[in-house]
Image 1 (cartoon, rainbow, N blue to C red):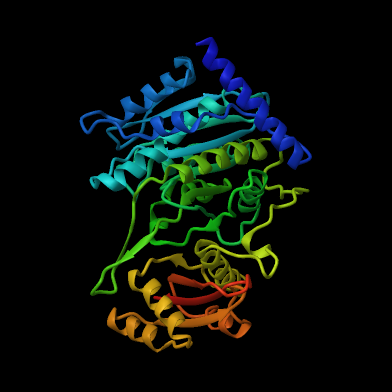
Image 2 (cartoon, rainbow, N blue to C red):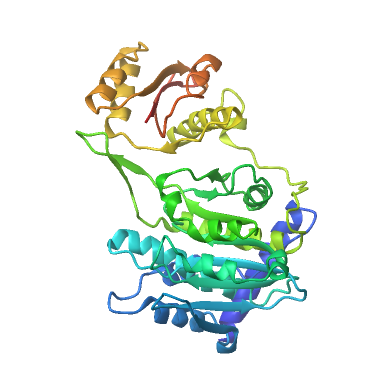
Length: 415
């Protein structure tokens, strides 16, 4: 046991040193290893009750039983489970996830991973001296129309609500890049989340506008009670059915994305703890070089090129006030783009035919050049329209005499 504690202490010191080099104030927490976090994310046996499994995880995390209470919820057969990490002051942070157990095994594995994040975060922050008391709450999820989080938020007094700096809901994490959902126009919480991502040198977080947002009941319940609320989720890959316009999300846990979200939440919560409710970040962090900032002439990977194009389009849509587009993988797009490259001729015709074949409508842009970037005119064509999904494919053709390669790109936005 002593050896394990010593290894954890080293992790705390390393993270504190790294953060101190990046920001005016460092944050320190007990950073768990990827192996521990992966183990905690594994779903319990089908016969095991999730409430019991969650309590077992809190025990493994070393959380004393007197920090955990179970409370009945009107109209629910389940009890809400509250773990309290006490702070010095009278302010609060609420971190929540759902106890609802989906019937689909893949969806259930993601739901459990989101729920299991509560004891993982509690273990990492339990020994940290914070100003705010952090409440980790697992809400019963039997009714979407009358969520238990709404009952909990409404029975708080006005004075209690004003002391809650933020309510952070964890839902659907680990399927891909970290995303968030907030009330339209709220910038404080997303900006703090982005600041945490910069401090950790993680990819920037994106708004979550996919259909799963209807399940983000906890944050919405707290916002309805005048408490700042944010849902932290993830962007899954989408698979388009071969002979129809239907698509489905891929609900598979990606460990490194899950671990990134874990680190992000630790720093995000500690940042919120030390600032006033509703305050905006005043960070002096210099972001690391991103693919978009590479010098022209640098060589990009296919993934980096695709990310640049997606960021171009979504940034323009955000500035225009349009919803950002979710990623959709179209299996045929890559081969079609490479065929266009080998023919050495830009041609949007085959891609238009592909949309018609799949009974989709949308916008298409094709590009080739020494740097992966659509023209301003092409980007303008994506900023309006009731599009929902974005597909991008890149084919890289090497150039002779050590010159930069040529990037052949196809971008398709569809409804």
